[in-house]
Image (cartoon, rainbow, N blue to C red; front, side, top):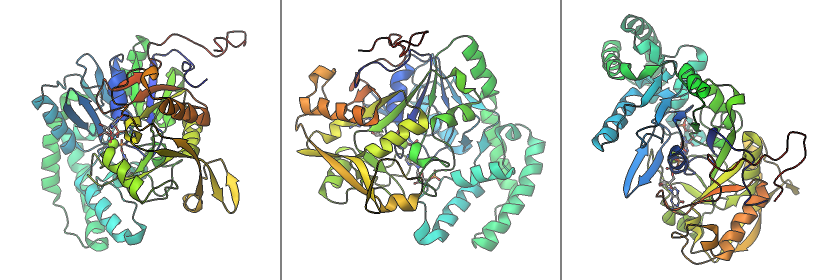
Length: 454
Ligand code: GDP
Ligand code: IMO
Ligand code: MG
C-alpha cells in the first residue's frame, strides 16, 4: 500500500502540520497552489512562519496564505485567524516590493485583531511563569484568542467602524491598563495613540475586507479547488496537543472547517505534512529529542531556526507514535514527507515505534503532557544511505535505503506517502501522486466492493 494513490480524487484539500509545526507546510502549500483557485488560512496568527523558496528567492509568510505567489490564486485570511495589522501590512509591502501582487488577497471581517496590549501581556506572562513558561513566540497570540473566548475581542469589522472602535478600545484599554500596571508593573497604554494607530491600519486594510465564509462558499458552488493551509501543527493544538505547551488555536484538520466557516462535507482530502525527523520550538515534552551530536547535525543540515523568532529548534528522530496520532486526529488521507535530504549523511537512522511508560509498552499517544514527559522511546534502527538525495526527482532515483525508510514510515502510519521533499525549492520534490489532479481511485465501489486494490 505504501506508495499507492491517496484514497480519493479531490477538489478541496486541507494541508496540516502533523508534528509540532515547521514541517514545511509553506513549501507544500505553494506547490499545491499551482492547481488551486483559492487558498485559505483558517487559524493562527503571526506566530506562523511559512517559508517558500522559488528560484533562489525566499519568501517568509506569517499571515498571508502561501498561494500568493500565483497571480491567479485568491488568498483568504479566514475568520479563525488572529490578525496583527502592523505585521500584515509589512508583509504586504514586502511582497509588493518583490513584485508579488496582493490584489487577490482578502481578509475576513470576523477575524480577531491582535492589539499592543496582547503582545505586552503575552511577553510579561511568559516572564512571570518563570520555569513554567510555554516558550511562546511573544506575538500576543494567546491573549488575542483569550479575549475572543472572553468576548472582549476586537474584530476586523470593528476596525472599519471608527466610532464603534473608539468606544470599544477606550473601555478595553482602560481595563487592560489595570492588568499591565497592577499585575505586571508596566506603564499604561495611551488609548488615543492606540486608537489613532489602528484607525490608520484600518483605512489601509479596508479594501481587502470581505465576508470570507460567503466567498469560500461561492467558490465551492462554482466547483473551484480550495486549499486550506494549516498553521502550527497537530501537537500544538489547543485541545489535542501537548497542553499546556500548545498554541491557542486548533491547527488540526477539524479546525480548518471551523476557522474558514465551511462544513466538513466539502472537504475531499486531508494531507499531513511531516518532516523525516522531528523538531519543536519552545518548551514541552519531546520524547525523541536528541541532545548530542546527531541532534546538532540535524539542526545544522536542516537549518533549524524558527522562521518567526529565530530561536534554534530542538531536533530528534521521527516519532511514529506521534505520526499515528496525527493520522487519527486529522483523518489523514496521505502524507507529504519533507526534509528527507537532511538525513543524507547518517550511517543509521532511528524511528520511534513505541513508548515505554511505567514499565509497559504503549503504542498510543498519551493525552497528558506529564505522562508524555515520562515516556521513553523504543526505536527501530534502519540503515542510512549516505548519498545525496537532493537531485532525486522520482522514487526510482532514491537510494534503496531511502526508499525503504519511506516505506517503513508509510507502513507504520498506515497511510500512503503522496509527496517527498528533498530540498527547500519547488523542483526538489517527488510527486508520488498529484493530490489534486491524480486519478480517481476510490477504495470502495458504490456497492462496497474494493477497487484498485493494487
Ligand atoms: P512551515 O512553518 O511548516 O511552513 O515550515 P517552515 O517554513 O517554518 O520551516 C521549514 C523550513 O525547511 C523552511 O526553511 C523551508 O524552506 C525548509 N524546507 C522545506 N522543505 C525542505 C526539504 O525538503 N529539505 C530541506 N533541506 N529544507 C526544506
Ligand atoms: P508554523 O505555522 C512552530 C509554538 C511556540 C510555542 C507554542 C505557543 O510556522 O508551523 P504561541 O506564540 O502560539 O502562543 O506559542 O507554539 N509555535 C510554533 N512552533 N511553528 C509554528 O508555526 C508555531 N506557532 C507557534 O514556539 O512553543
Ligand atoms: Mg514555520
